[in-house]
Length: 164
Image 1 (cartoon, rainbow, N blue to C red):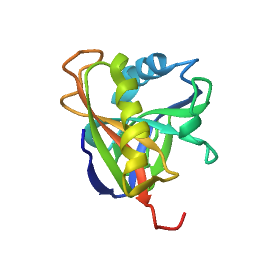
Image 2: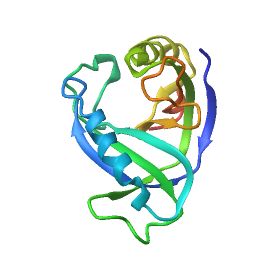
Image 3: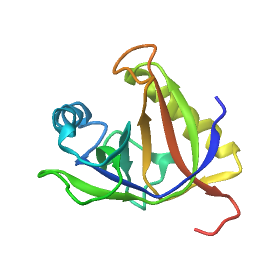
């Protein structure tokens, strides 16, 4: 599994976020809530959905465990923040360098992709993890809990010799 390396431009997102951990996973209820209300969002830019994780700056992914809390977002890109629906928030996703992997399979198999990225690819690459949100881009090939589903996994990176 070889990623493509991309420079992501800054994006404007609107959606819903909650604090959670993998041990207390609320992804299903977050997305259920978001999908019933996403048609209230005006000025959407494209149809791809963002499943975004905002981690604490001090998190060391080598010691990641099921109880680590993070902010999970269900969002969509918008052209502007002129009318953010009630109970939703706006988020500016800072641009930068990302490694983009393709995860094929259901969400139950995502752990294998996660292990490969952080256990194999990242340590042997010319990159370090950068402190920006991680996200999955759920586009046309995404089929919820389907073994033939595909999603893009965007991991923020910087050159190993770059300053933090």
